[in-house]
Image (cartoon, rainbow, N blue to C red; front, side, top):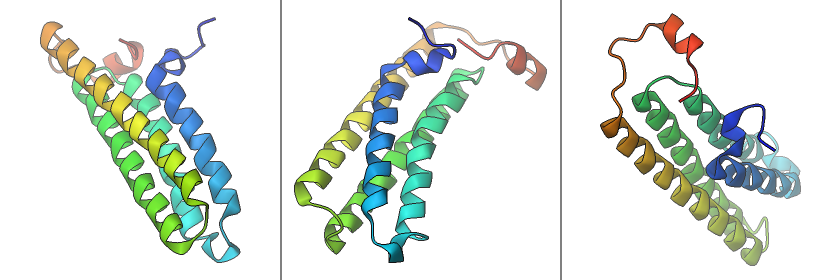
Length: 142
């Protein structure tokens, strides 16, 4: 059954959402001294991954959609580095972190594929020039 919001049906969004849930589980295991530093940063980055996919999907132009997917990809890379911090500080088992890094790599791969798809679509479909903000709100989906 299709979701109310079509972005929820995207494979990249579904994989990113599962990745976010796994990151949140890891964050709950971090020591108390990381509550307001690393834990907070990781939660914000994990939410940013899915938020940017959703926001980009709701944009009118391919350029905007691609921009938000690139923002999402940047947050995935940020989380990959946060996983390195967790490894360096011994906050989780190396095999658990390795699995999370593999998930991050898969989300990045899917984002790259979606970006490539959007770039191809942008070349084959003509977007109306100079769309106003009002037009963008009335036509939020592809």
